[in-house]
Amino acid sequence: MGLSEEVQQSLIEKIKAGELPHSDNPEKKGTGITSEIESSDGLKIQRTTFPDGSVIQSTIDLTNAKIKEENVVTPNDVSGGYASGGTGYTLMILMLI
View 1 (cartoon, rainbow, N blue to C red):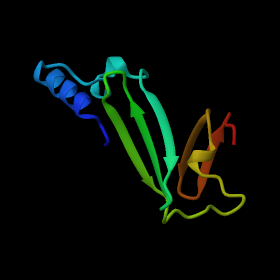
View 2: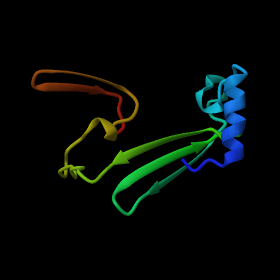
View 3: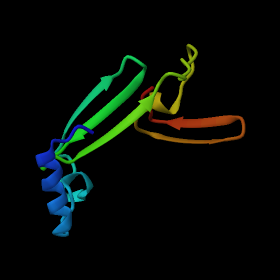
């Protein structure tokens, strides 16, 4: 993940001392700096670096993603409100689409 030797050793010592790296510590949530890039091969990479040098990195492979059709609403298009559904219907209340 490209961590320097110094950061690696610091994190190893932290773990040996029984401490959690900031990336695994719920109390440190929100203290990292997040960056996002899209690689030339279509991968979307999100990396959060914490003050102690620990990181969280996630990669989304968009190479096989299908573009949704026009006039189609997906769960990612909806915010707020409440939704429920069953066979052949969906009820949406107080939602921003």
